[in-house]
Picture 1: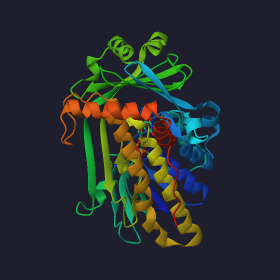
Picture 2 (picture 1 turned 60 degrees about the horizontal axis):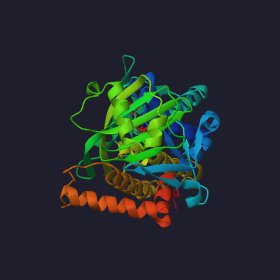
Picture 3 (picture 1 turned 90 degrees about the horizontal axis):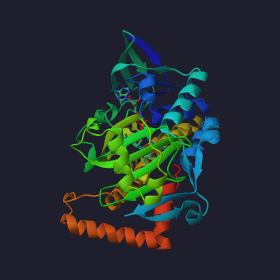
Length: 404
Ligand code: RFL
Ligand code: PHB
């Protein structure tokens, strides 16, 4: 067994792990990342597209914003369409200046990977049997196999940035963990194509046929989603069938503007709300999807990962710069406060915009009554300025909280 040492061991080289690693490095804090798959595999995951201001600021603080600032598109508004009728939420006006930036998760991940490589920081890709140990002690370590060799990575702290299926969360004993979960009775079928977007801003569309989202990656690349039953398989959907269904769900003008083309990627994502409490155990901290999942309707997943990173990075900076070890105890409480706001918003948007049929998830209502409540909720929030402001403030992202 080969023993190596660092200050912070990071498990997972997704956006959470890479951003945390970069920010810690900027503060002179050593870190090593251990990743299960290859870098190319990580870059093959087509996911988020919308970044909150807080995320953008954090990427700038990490010194990796050059391409995002040049190529990302600022969106000052977003459209919510209900049965073909458009309601524009003017984010900038309603929030007093805040906007979101449209820049893909793949791009931000690539920028972070390149910056890490350029700084000569260590990332061990294709590691297997990754396992944290002694996380309650002052000398935790992680064991794993890499390139045919067994490793023991000794460290002060472990950041579990290993996504929903990672090992970090399972390291917290079951009797200490509380897991909250809602699995929705449908998924999103997504399609990526090299065609110009059908509208300059995102359109979240509720229709009798189900939800649809018109998103984008650039002036020449579109990303679209439609709600599908969980029983559907990607193979059931030809590109042509996807485009036909999408046009029926989007507002008529957007459908008329739609340029179709062959899919570059097509996949189905199930929708889930999930929170693990607490988000820390001894010297192990859970970050991002390792601790929480949201349905993509609010565009919050990656953004919540970023606020966890911001909190942990500030806490660890204080530990190493000021010797204030006690401040680590604040992590879970600060992170969870913001996580629950994002969870609530994503759950609410999902409830209002999807077609639930008869399945409403056990809050004691029949399907039709639930549908009526949600229609009325949308009607109220979209047709009153205060209602639109409530949506706008959460869509651009609530403020980050600093440790005390
Ligand atoms: P990731 O991206 O899952 O990365 C975790 C990494 O850990 C590795 N790993 C391990 N490494 C070592 N040992 C192990 N035992 C390991 N087990 C796993 C994995 O290989 C992986 O590389 O989690 P992270 O970094 O926390 O990032 C979270 C985001 O990826 C996620 O929240 C977003 O993609 C969610 N999301 C969206 N978020 C937004 O903020 N805005 C959006 O518009 C948005 N749209 C989306 C989304 C997610 C989607 N899907 C497919 C779930 C749209 C979709 C369709
Ligand atoms: C995306 O572009 O992939 C995207 C945008 C907004 C969402 C979800 C996904 O709410």
